[in-house]
Image (cartoon, rainbow, N blue to C red; front, top):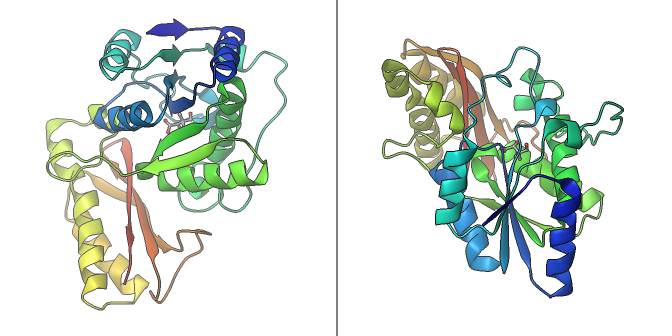
Length: 281
Ligand code: PAF
């Protein structure tokens, strides 16, 4: 396995692979790899000749008061995990290469970026769309793999790829969960012991919503009210939003008639966690 630090070297590698008719599967990450990331790498490994894992903590997608500086970074451990999963290349560019001092260009996916998490993290999806576009242009992968845990991100990236005619297939893979249901996230490492116990309530609330829908409840407001009640029982939990939306355009759904995306963001102590499920009535 190689670690490539330079954009030029990364593009040259990809060009060489394509000349040899080798397909490239790409897993973009910000490092601090966990089992969820490894499942994406495994999937990429099974479907492509070469696997590239991107590790770049992208400053553009963090707000000024967010955790960019303290975001966990551990290249040595990440490299070990990537190697175990049969990764061919880790692409590990630095910030100055990705965003030189005179950087001016951004990618914005309108509307889809302003709701749900976007409402509370202005500029976040502009940062994500911009960096993913750059990474796709540098690596030219055949397929790029994202986690369904970041459902809004996956929807935005798919739309961006469609609108900009980028020659890559986007796959959103199922959320990987801890035994108790907590979605795997690099930010789970921030949680203290009692917070970790409380954090399971995100999944419990989503499961409760799914059960209510399956039992015939079609009233989003009522379902959200019940989810709130459950989450508010946990001392360290502070709800940022709970929404029931259409999984295509992310518009709120009042009466549930078709498949819906139920998404939420909850602070557990100071740690902001997100989760979601897609439910059919
Ligand atoms: O999901 C993430 O880890 C990031 O948002 C991504 C896609 C790597 C872009 O920085």
